[in-house]
Amino acid sequence: MVEIHEIGRRSACHVITLSALFAPGSGAIHSSGTTPSVAMVDDGAVHGYGPSSYGDAFADVYDDWYRDVSDIEATVAALHALSQGGRVLELGVGTGRLALPLAARGCQVTGIDSSERMLERLASHDPHRTIQVVHGDMVDDLPTGPYDVVFSAYNTLFNLLSAERQQQCLARSRAVLAPGGRVVVEAFVPHPHTGSQVSVRSMSADRVVLSASVHHAADQRAEGQFIEFTEGGGVRLRPWAVRYTHPHELDALAAEVGLQLQHRWADFTGTAFDDSSEQHVSIYRVADAA
Image (cartoon, rainbow, N blue to C red; front, top):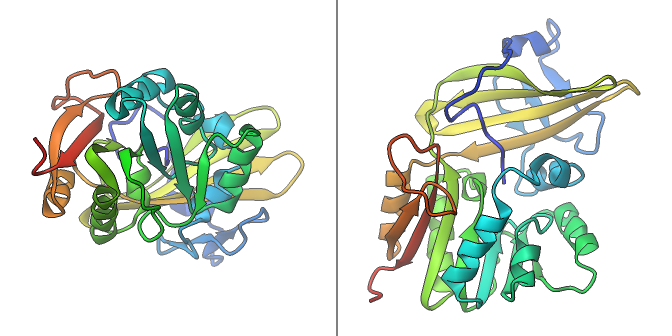
């Protein structure tokens, strides 16, 4: 899951230019934290970013930063109903924010994630091992299932950085569905702009977290860093990158692999989706299903 505000409709925030983060002639900010191979350089790209970069960088703050980013109770209730309490596969399970309460509702939950650090956090929250865990890629390493629901929550599909990979994920999700199963995608509705910006994510007496991002509307890509400064010294970088997809484009990708849109909501409570919606929950079924 990636928290993106700048690509959607934005609330007011203090914004400065990205170039202000770079000393003249330096060309880069390097991390003194645990992801030193990842850096944002002055061409606007996050170099050294790989499939596990996001999870490895955010695992230690994920529960604090993102615990309430969406309605857990409504999400779990909807997924439980769609799966009829059956077998569920979460793509990008992270620390188990949704998987654990879903299992507590009686579903048999499998979670896949490319970040070992995220899965370590999940294990610490799940001493009775109620979640079946797969350490791997959500395109290439999906377990065989079959599953009643395969879902990616809160922008997780956008972590796949090309339309081709996103479509492959949809195709492989379809392949592991049980008869009558559903693929569920939750994501923001893009309202993109091109350029760079920096905003303040949080600030306290001894810590400041900035959000630096660069958007490439033509490529439907955005990437950036959360930059954490602490009074104790040092700088911690937490990189992210997404390839965002518009709902109509997602429908087209799904249709090409035999999935048909069944419902689209504005959220997991079932609120009607319309042109003012800032996010969507899209539910797909196999195209030839009754």
